[in-house]
Length: 111
Length: 117
Image (cartoon, rainbow over all chains, first blue to last red; front, top):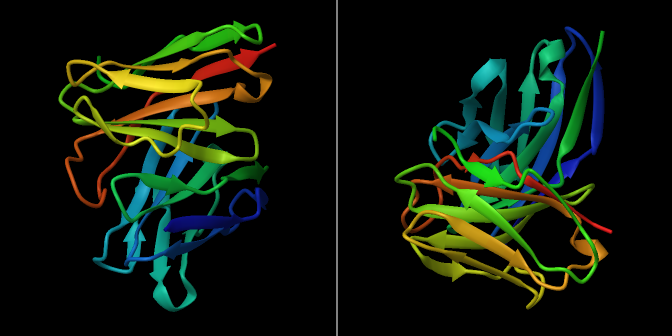
C-alpha cells in the first residue's frame, strides 16, 4: 500500500519569501517520490524526483526537496518565491507501476 | 504530436448519457494512465495500460467505467449512464515505463473537463 498526505490545501507566501510545501508518505517498500506542478490551464509536469540516490534532490525553477526516512517526509522548498511559482503542487509516491498522488497544495504568491 | 493530446477538452452532457474521452499518447510510450481530478480530491488513479493490456484497473469507480487501448497507442475512456458525481477533469498520461516500479516521468495531457448536468 502507498499513500501521500499533503498538509495545507492552500499556502500563501510573499514574493521573495521561503516556500515550504509539506508532504508525508506511507509505503510498504522503500518509496520513490515525486513532486509535480500544474500551472493554470495546463497539464501536470514533473518538478523533481527521488529514486533512492541522493536524499536532497534539486529540480527545475530553483525547487528542491529532501527525503527524510525517519520523518517519512519529502517536503518541497524554494528559498525565494517568484510570482511565476503560483500553481498547484502535487506530491506522489510510487511503489508499483502507478503513481499515487496527494490532494494537492495551491500556492499563491503575494506581491 | 509532441505531447499527450486529449479530446474533447470540454464536454457537457446530460445525466444518463454515455461519453467517450480520447487520449493520444506520445509516440513510442508503452505505458498509458488515466487519472481523475476532482476539486479537493487530488488525482485519483483509474487505470493503467502497458501496451494494449490493462494490468491494473483497480481505480475504475464502477462498472459504468471502461477503457481500452488499441495498437499500443490511442486510448478511449468510456463512461456509461453518466451521473453528476462523474463531473471532473479526466487526465491521461504516458511514459516509457515497461515493468516494475515506476521511476520515470509521466507526461500529462491537459485533460478533458466533463460536466454532467
